[in-house]
Image (cartoon, rainbow, N blue to C red; front, side, top):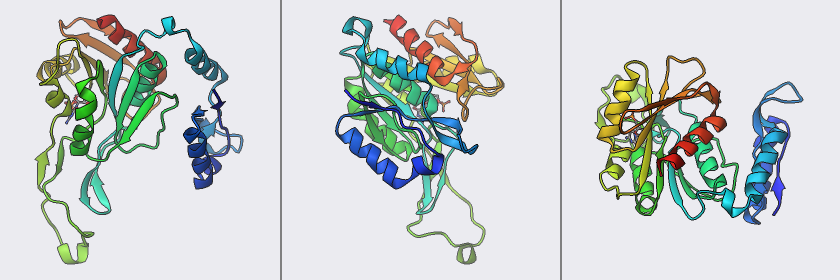
Length: 286
Ligand code: C5P
């Protein structure tokens, strides 16, 4: 097996020739350890920092770990991640600030522990950093639900971390809307399907489903209500009032509730570390 941990300036990493070459390496079955985001040798800030050596060693150790160290070997997992984009016209959409990072970290951790993972991702700039992940890219909530249906049927573990838009425009313009000809207008929205609830309604016994709740107030109450409504086995609450928790950043602070309402709280950690806690918690559910 060959692992590549590229490091370079952000423009160079982003360049289509570099990305094309990485795709060629992937197509040969090589493993790409994606560079991290942060300050670069040029003092520019962006994606291109070589992944931390400790993390590279950890990825290699997990890859070469004996099967006995991979508790999820033979299990199938489905993860949703990222925002959804709800199209208004060919160039505009309604979206949200989700980076997708939490979901990607969970998918990577599940794969590291041996699960074969399908990651259904809304638009993000992320790539899975470990092998064993089948990535399906979608844009809208409706597309995300359709992409989830087949993998959900035989998923042992489903983690719904996507920030799905609650509404989509009732109509999508075929051509770009022009202010000059359209003037003021009212936008009519229609509710999107609830992916978690739709899948939850057909859940078999033994299938584990975990969702997320991002709340600004009455967090616990809302998390419990959502867990019941969507038939989840557990829900991960991140409170927006906690500094460093939630959408855009690289850290998160979570409390996980089980269906009995028992809470397990974790301190502020990197999303990679939070993903480990979440996956350990899921394994603990049995
Ligand atoms: O948006 P809400 O707070 O209800 O999201 C809670 C959980 O439900 C999250 O796990 C989210 O991924 C999931 N969800 C979904 N489809 C939606 C809305 C939310 O799967 N349309």
